[in-house]
Length: 277
Image 1 (tube, rainbow, N blue to C red):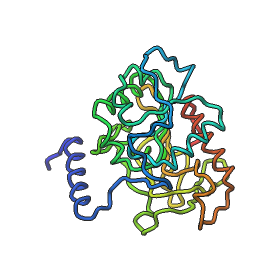
Image 2: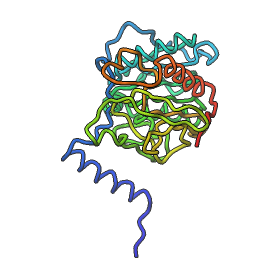
Image 3: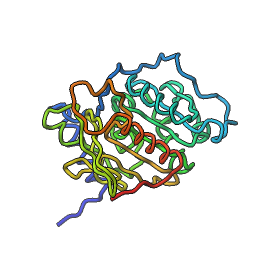
Image 4: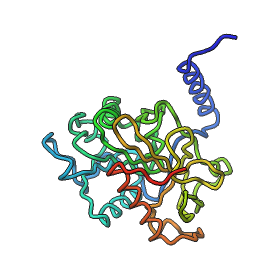
């Protein structure tokens, strides 16, 4: 029997995936969140400085707010960072495209919120995503991706970051049942179960260590090293505000979930491993 190299198998798998996409439209790697998709013209946020002299101790976090991100989730993450008293800069797609790898490496953590990962990748140059990948894997910058940011952190034909050594992610099972947003039960090793807001997010099988699991046992939150950097990916939205919960029943309070989102941010910022399976 002839054995094919892993690269050929992966290319064949993605060819089949493209065919499925064209015929069914299922695999869009979108992660819808309340709020309009953010465009490139957003002047209400602080742009990253052009200088390379910035130190990670002054402004440690870069929050991506570019095309494809959800304005609602950008606001939720900004509120979270404010409550944690963490300094950050924001970058649109055009701003991130114009940043050098050295400028990106000046930050300790890059956060990519929810939205649509295909659109995020479309409006970033290949140079930009390569610079981010190098900043993480060679420069030791950390990465936190919420929902679409989780998709984007993995391997993707849509200009993803591939911080996962070729592993790509599919939707959580509820998506294929026609459910697009829900309160999902997340188990954690040695800790209480949480109900957390989910909207078209991924399950993160195949990479890293599972920090939290969906009720079907697939990973909802994963962590791990990517080169020199520390990466946390989540298919859910613990940062979701109360307004997102309309029409749904949660056993966990919104303050509890947001506090857990803060735990994820701090773990990503400091490269700290959380309890995992």
